[in-house]
Amino acid sequence: MTDLHRLSIRELSEGLAEAKFSSRELTEHYLKRIEKIDAQVQSYVTVTPEQALAQADAADAAIKAGHASALTGVPIAHKDIFCTQGIKTTAGSKMLDNFISPYDATVVAKAKAAGLVTLGKVNMDEFAMGSTSESSYFGATKNPWALDHVPGGSSGGSAAAVAADLAPFATGTDTGGSIRQPASFCGLTGLKPTYGRVSRFGMIAYASSLDQGGPMARSAEDCAYLMNVMAGHDAKDSTSVQKDVDDYVANLNGTSVKGLRIGIPKQYFNVQGLDADVKTRVEESLKKLEEMGATLVEIDLTMTDAYVPTYYLIAPAEASSNLQRFDGVRYGYRCENPVDLMDLYKRSRSEGFGPEVQRRILIGTYALSAGYYDAYYVKAQKVRRLIQQDFLKAFENVDVIAAPSAPTTAYRIGANLSPVEMYLGDIYTIAVNLAGLPAINAPVGFDKDNLPVGLQLIGNYWSESQLLSVIHQYQQATDWHTKRAAIAEENA
Image 1 (spheres, rainbow, N blue to C red):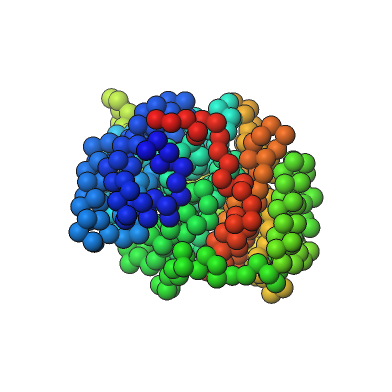
Image 2: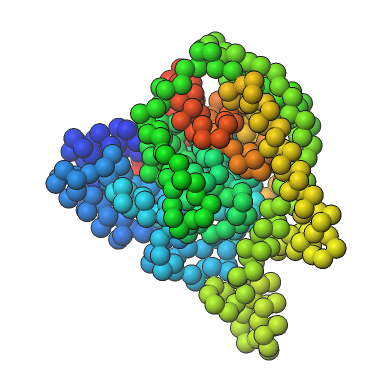
């Protein structure tokens, strides 16, 4: 079969169960597509054909024996921030180019337990710091919709792999929009869960109070299948919350759009730099939801101006702390012929880290230093609480909040955005992480250059089922999520 890559996760699951094709055939199909197409997209850092085919054969045996789960035998790509036992885990950095993890991240272990087949590890901004995937030590990933444009970041490799049909779905991580923004740029559905819903054990840390793993796929239904695997309490992660997990697939029609109150923050649609096409497509999607029975309610989010400065104090401060461990002593990159211990530290870190990572470490170290800690870091944490309260007040009157996922469509590769311009591109996503809320991106059309536009819906705590359900019903009434870039139509 030459069109296996066009099937949804549900169709793949049913096809495997009914023996219409085997997991080995499906895995070989994707491996051939990667070999043929990925040189243009550059979404994978590491492809693992031998392991993938061994896992596929084990999946076929489990299916034949009647021991299969819903996803047994379905291939997946993992963002290269999740540790994978025996496979290189780089976080997109020279610092970890030689690191082979001795253990699996909990997300990876759960995927293996569910019978998923790992195709390989996909590219990302170095240590998840960036919005374009250009900061990767392994080179820039290309957007399948336009190969001279970025796929977004930091989960750009995950987004590009799915958008080019080089994986049915992929894991991503979201610290300030790194699932939602690349999903928007690549025309995908991507869910950032409530903080604590998905284990962070084995997920290389950027900013520990903000990082959260989640699914990236073509549709809400596909994301729901992966959320059923990823979600749940993990005793190995002290920030993982002990709370019952929904059956996200079973709940896809659990929330009626009819009567749903969608909050429209007036500040979000008057942001300087919001592209006219993006604004129009998002407003059209909201009108469609209104036609389906939703009510649009204007709301006031008063802390909007504080999002960017608050995030870019807290996130770099936590990064400064987390990245201390990469010192050239225990593992990872080590400079050659150090003169003494200080030289080892300095050169290992300056040679092993790229410019964006060094920039954020410097910002964070400054904010945490004596004399500035109270003035910057402590004050940012106080403002963070106000941002959270701002959202909670809004949720007293609405069920979800709507916004663009990004103010523009995908940037051109090498656009040379200043760091400040890049940071301002996160205006719609970072507050969700500061507050620990769940949010989802869904494709809702294209701009004048045929680049995808994304709608973001933000939910109250633990409302992942509601967000997936609303977007699923929207996708039953529209076909934006079925659109494919030309490169994705190529057959292996």
